[in-house]
Image (cartoon, rainbow, N blue to C red; front, side, top):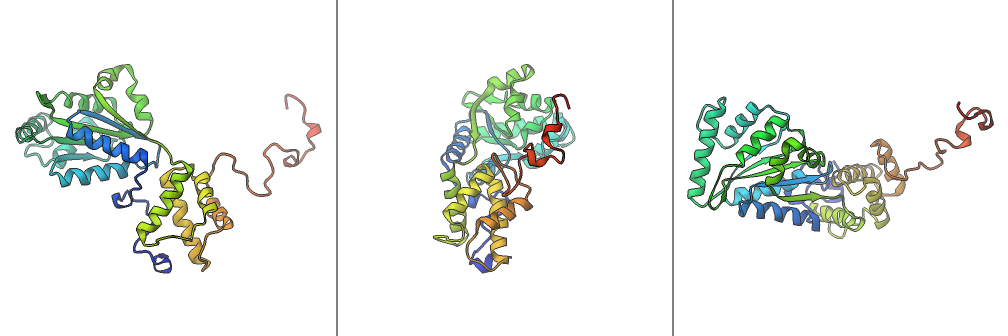
Length: 298
């Protein structure tokens, strides 16, 4: 809606995980490098964790682009609320295995044949599981057993588990200690620092076609960082709504009043949030009855 107004070639704050808009912060760059290294070195199990909205799926999309460019076979499981049978069926579909996809036994035989064939050609194969913190224990155990497929040169199947911090806690369970021991690489994504948030906003605006942007003054970007707590997805949501507000009022730069309105509409909360003129929750003015009438135990 506002792209023509600002001269954008595409929306700068799209919420979809678009690899072309990946801002390569030091943490994201290191995590992506570790994912690629783990695959190329046939390390076996790799875990990627991060809070909601920190960019895990975007990194996985970048990894998929790399795998496709290298003609590496991979399966991508994006819906982790599945049974063990559904898990094997999804692998069979993604890898286009020529077998009865409803039979776990046939899928395993076909998968093993594919992995050996790839290994004989000095190639590897990859299994990517997003939202892995939702996996049932039974499915995690099946994944562990897939990690046993190997030859003298390394693991035949590289397995990447991506999820929220709950995944790390789940892997600490005593019944998953065998899986935990097989994890060779761990990558963790953190929210942006303030300087990274500012660089992220400027990068996305420039990538969309606005070089040397002036629509978001420095103080507004700093405030966006505070209110988003450095979470890229929340930054995108604020940025998109803020651009829409600037466009609707036919202005050329965002203001603090606009940001306040956007944050109210989004029902955002952040540490230290205090609406202008808002009374403290337990301030004397917030009681209809004088505070002196309240005694201990009421």
